Image (cartoon, rainbow, N blue to C red; front, top):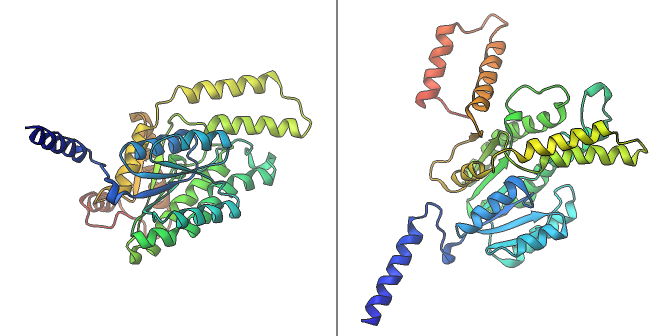
Length: 323
């Protein structure tokens, strides 16, 4: 009787685990590297993957963040600043030494627009910093870890932004430009990786709770201090307003769900626009429609309205490639 009860309990446990859409068993546990996993979207995704049974290599820069990540089951923290080649090389060596392979690479590390602003008034160094993380950092980590992902015939997914698909606001050309680069990078890399059996995609979040805006505002204040300038009450109030607004946003659970689909679904999408409300969805799509109209305004080969509608119908039906 005891053996019968034990067998029933075991079967029930297996059934519960199998019911999870992302269940992963120890003998086939996939490893995923996430850059920028200390806070926000990266941290949320790291915990989501770990809870689902996957093994996460979580990249972070600060010791306190590394310690916190290491304390979570199924997470191995890695000191990783994507702007530093020696740390990327060390992370690669560590993963190779552990022998787990690497199924997925999530290029999530990024910085916001803090420090960059109006083109005519902003030092080039401020834009260079944003591109060193959001562009060169993504390129550097992909170049380093792609061979391991190729071995696993896995997936590479990058955190973009709706800022990379819509027109930039004044003062946001550096950040938006870096995210527009992610769009081109994704399409090009996808074509390069397809012959190797590796799928590539991008998740484009709207406004969710993270630390990127506060970090940017804080970095701007530190630059003023370093230059010997005065941090005014107006600047302090602006930082507090930024923090209050950012903390009011939704947790990025929906963003993590998009990443889970991109990493493991049998039919992943090239692009995932993930927004917290209908207003951001409308703004994003309406902006793309307006850009389409602008592209079609000049020259002898412009399409008529009916021809544009026909193209849209073809795309919606899946008759034309989505990428």
